Length: 391
Image 1 (tube, one colour):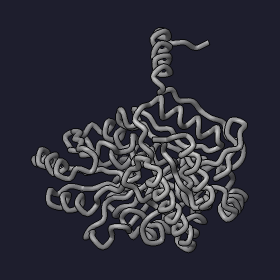
Image 2 (cartoon, rainbow, N blue to C red):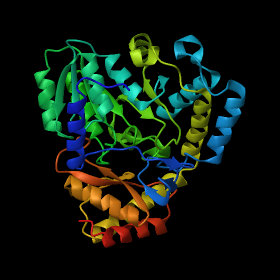
Image 3 (cartoon, rainbow, N blue to C red):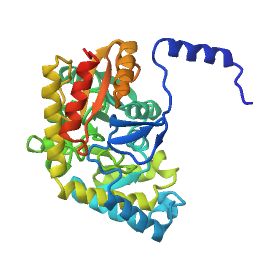
């Protein structure tokens, strides 16, 4: 048996985490991802996945995956820079160039790897990295490994972003980094203001739009599209496929020079195996649906309005989000866990989010809506929230 010399202190820390109501554990799902899931042997209605358009089990994606697997096999077998870059990868990159309106796109196996790459590949010691305090953990980790000087500003506080830019005024290379749609709050970054400040201070901007792409903007083009009329320039864009696209992997979209620089310098691109070509083929199918079946986004927006209207009538504390992420703030960690269990007893599965994922005293039920949900299911969830006395 493998055991560390400090085994006892680790065990004590785990026991304390359990006592504090912060313990995490993996749950077993049988069958396909979707609105109806079998988790730990129970049939539940899920309001806690990121499959915002209901594409994870779509027949067109499955067919595209199977067809590509018949041609390419199930693994890429090498890094993109060796023999891992297939025709399906190339076609997906070209399609994403058109979708995003950027010059170039490069693919990654995960969004985490893309966010490490875009920061570590562009920033180094002596540079300035300025991040929203509620950015995703992968962006914060990208900053840690880059060795750039770190600045943080309170969530969406443009006055203090301006202040941080002034503090970094003597640093030549400055990069502002923000989520587009914040994963735990569901609100948007004020992108026009960020871009204006970046222009004033000669800073670059990176937007991680994992939760915006496919959901908001024209044809699901995300946060950049949502603010398109207010933007003169585009930031570097990071997008993921594991949410609204229903597949797996991620991309960075930027100009030619940025993508070439990352190709040469981004360690999480250079030193890893490329995603399976069949996943790229399935993602191409998802992209086609996102652009051409916009009724999915329209239905999702109607469900969001229905949920927010109903939750407001119940007196629930919502956050200012018009996206698929609809958190209900509970506050106390143990109470949030208990409410999550109570909802599960009524066959509804919701995300229970606690520190350190969110700030202390802001534990919440993270409810995510999908175009695969029905209005009836949303009504049933609201009724269950009322019965569980969620306040």
